[in-house]
Length: 125
Image 1: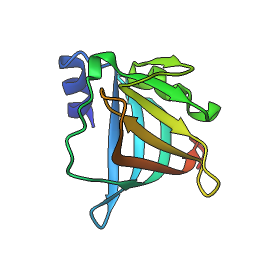
Image 2: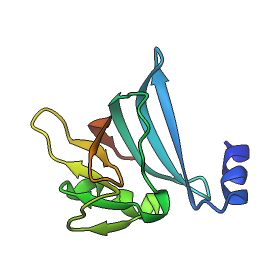
Image 3: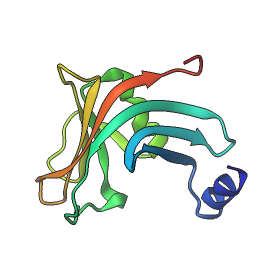
């Protein structure tokens, strides 16, 4: 963990995300500060495809309809906005989940890559 945090600092990254898997499938994302403090833990499933995402990270924004996940904009270092036309992460509500996280590319198209948030854990879980 220490090596990962040091590498993140070398790359001028403020925070770090660790993705855990079960049987080769993403199951949990833990976000850490550059001091190693847990910022957020989410239990997930993901729909993954081999398509090219066509996203420009330097212009990426976050549109969130789920207030509990608004913190992802700060953690990821992307501006939180009310709406966007293209190049954004959309966090939306879902009846069966806490949220769905979709990626909208620079052409304004939703990509096939989707993160399904099943649970948000706090430090006591």
